[in-house]
Picture: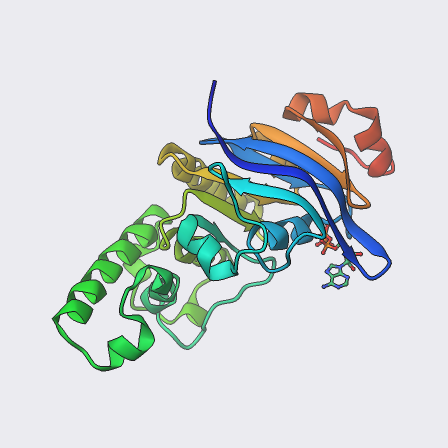
Length: 256
Ligand SMILES: Nc1ncnc2c1ncn2[C@@H]1O[C@H](COP(=O)(O)OP(=O)(O)OP(=O)(O)O)[C@@H](O)[C@H]1O
């Protein structure tokens, strides 16, 4: 039996009168790729916001490697080993590619920003470790040769990969990718897919929200489908493609 890395147990969140996530349960096994799909407004990003501590659930439990994480602050959740990317690009265009990744690691530093200003031997050692780990994350995403370029000068597909590199630099066990393939051309999607598999090969668990069905079906081990905040289906890509409730939720749009 493989180990469960993330467990959601009857998780609900209400915003005023709206139940954005309605009693959702799921277990994600370590080392797998899980996709979360569903129509616009189904509650997918909200689930990521619940897991990463942006919102505490109204009710229910979220456990990471057996430890309850509901109500914990986002930086503590990052330190425990959960990293994420966002739907829209959040890079510092005027900083270099390497500096964008180094920012993703400041949760791992002991001295913090104030300490970094009063540079001592510990800061220098830490700085070296951060640079090395950042370069490794860039190598994984095949962006190491662009370390000194400004982020704004990268082509779109590479900017999205840079965001993943930044998330990887915090050395997570679980990485949440919110629409990683959005806006990419087929070639960029293909490259991204092989890189996500490389991340999996390193032993990480990947949880992704994605609208591109071909991408999801090719990559995922299992898929969870949300509609109006509720989990309406879960299963392998083959099971999901022929599930009548899923087909109905997408109103006849092809799920394959
Ligand atoms: N902070 C908030 N306050 C009020 N309502 C919210 C908040 N965050 C999300 N919602 C609502 O919760 C519902 C789910 O939104 P969410 O962004 O999670 O959907 P989604 O499945 O990610 O959609 P999309 O595919 O369009 O990104 C929507 O009706 C949205 O308007």
